[in-house]
Length: 121
Image (tube, rainbow, N blue to C red; front, side):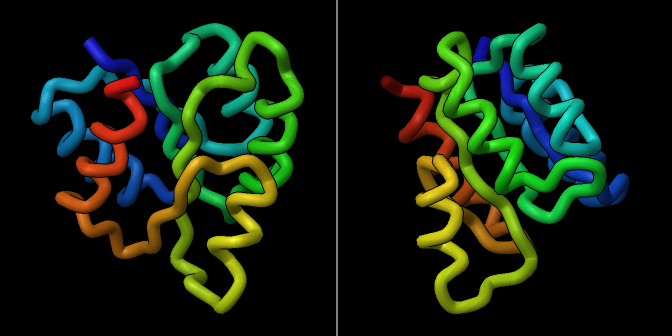
């Protein structure tokens, strides 16, 4: 079963997305900030990380960079998620180490396509 680490500080968004992914057969573990995301990536070794970029404690940009610099985690695909779809944000997410990027509100079918693309490897 594919395990997804969902990193999202907004409880409503986290619960909704986790429930929808679970109904589609994924195992979902969740973190609420960037530091917790790094710790859970190490302990859970997920197949994929969905990383909100606007997080407390340590933002998703820096958490992604740190995951990419960790030899044990660097190959885990990361899809950046943000409500701030500003010009240049996608490029910024890719530069930070995200494999792809999705805007909120989440287009769930499109997100499933991205997940399938990165977990089919």
